[in-house]
Image (cartoon, rainbow, N blue to C red):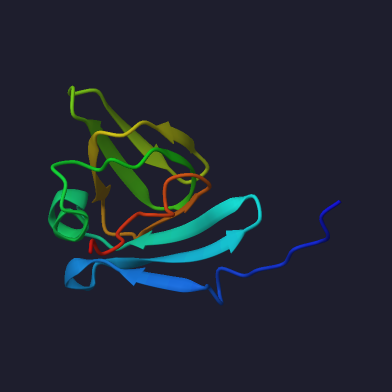
Length: 122
């Protein structure tokens, strides 16, 4: 039987900044998998601020997340779109773009898609 684990996103194991100072991802790795908290600043857009890091045409991460604050619009490669705000739970398959709506940072927890998110290639 596994023992208790305690980690803090306020003292993450890794921090990955987004291009242009538009936010960052803080990660902790528990035995059950990685968990991340991303802060997307107003003006952040995946295709502008993470695409150069990921090197893919759209986000290929699959997300299972919870929005703590702010608003985010996600648009799938096939055109399906949804807006997420504080209190919303999100399941998002690979193949999308996303951007912050409004002038409040979007803060989001993710239990699935942040392990390789915004990780420099190479």
